Length: 402
Length: 227
Ligand SMILES: Nc1ncnc2c1ncn2[C@@H]1O[C@H](COP(=O)(O)OP(=O)(O)O)[C@@H](O)[C@H]1O
Ligand SMILES: [Mg+2]
Image (cartoon, rainbow over all chains, first blue to last red; front, side):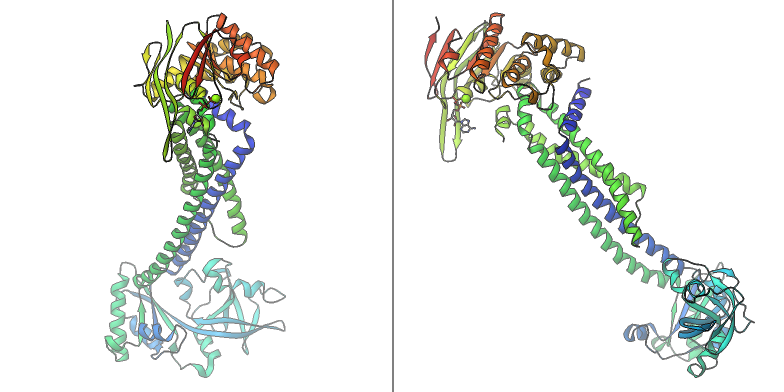
């Protein structure tokens, strides 16, 4: 009974001190919105990166020329000693657990011509198995090419739709370098990491070798990847591959001229990247909590301090310390709740704006509930301490407060 | 019967280095039905004495009995109980809750005393009637004149049927006409049986009581019986 009366008092108070209530609530709204928005960005970026890295993962082993040591010291793009050939790949097929081998020849820049317009794109040659290897090359229209075909291409969706005035359709002819190619497939439009493939063209390995001309020897490839059969441990298969390649290249462990990247070694590299990122993002979230929390605590603290005199009056007419505390705690909680709800709404709007500018966000239900709890609890706590301090004063001391 | 008994009460304030002794040993007994004025120059300790009598403040030493019960050993909740049920305090500056209507202001002490909504409303309405403000029940303090605010404050002081009304310069913030009305209201309440102690530095106001206690420099200088 009395509790309801006290609640009514709190609500009356909040409603008739509209401006002050609004200002206090505004302080909390901003704090909560800042916290939730920043954490949602942190979560969104994390989700985005995990998503993208997930696309790279899989049951395959990547093999590159040059040792890891060389790569580290020379930089990713530098020329490295050591060559990989299709002969190497053919030999690897004898290893148990090697399902298939993909070869890649990279073409940095290549002119293409369509209906008297020319443009430069990036591209590469792969054997047809590439389409099974990675979701980065997912054919939307048409079909992938086959290994026995020549002068056929699969093109990215930007190449098909945006580069030329007229869209390129499946089965049309485009000129790549000096040779006519038939477009057999167009890649699915996709965002994120996969969007790197939307501006490129993919062609059979032999076609790429032909276009590169003198730059490459008859069976050399830039990269290989091994698809591991089901039921085999990629790490063990990877070890067999290294042994085989050492044998083929006449090298030993200390002067390997190739790098074998198993899913585990990839994920450990990825792990250090995301680990750093997570640390960074939780740092941001921590700062948001601190700043928002201090903001909430400060507004609440001030609004209770201001009312020390009112507490003196309440005590003078017979309120116990606990009644005073309950009244102010109720008020602080209501302010915290309302501020939290509005803060979530504001955060929702803020994330929409951020999304519009391409910043990924994610307000999970847990984050929303956390934001609400945080607001109510920080609000109540920040109200509790000054209210308790004031309620424990003798009435005259509280009344003297200006 | 003794409602309030003050026994050798002293009050000191520590002002940094030195001590300020505001009350230097006050003895005072208030009997049921009494009407007492406390008079004295500004700064003589009148308010301090009244606040101690109302359990709004604690003396540095000495004893205060309310209804023959020693308050010096009481904890915060027990003191709150005394303030709630035995004492009605009226301030110079009214100290109404600005967000509440007259009737809600009067009900508030009864909320603290655990009365039901019906009991509170009935009592608050009677009290509004008593102080002549029945038609102002739903007005907020800002919509009332000074005299009317003080009437509401008096009604609030009476909410839990206190043993004693303590009024600190109840007319100090009012024009003389409103002041007269408030004094007449307080004296009317005294005639109806309420015990009254009020502080005033105005002899015209103080004269309405039956006894005038003259305080000077923290001591009772003399007690004057009004004819
Ligand atoms: N909290 C306090 N700290 C220090 N001095 C105080 C305090 N409260 C009152 N005083 C001093 O005590 C003296 C008596 O105050 P008060 O009882 O209000 O006087 P009166 O009501 O008679 O004018 C004054 O000199 C005043 O300055
Ligand atoms: Mg005074």
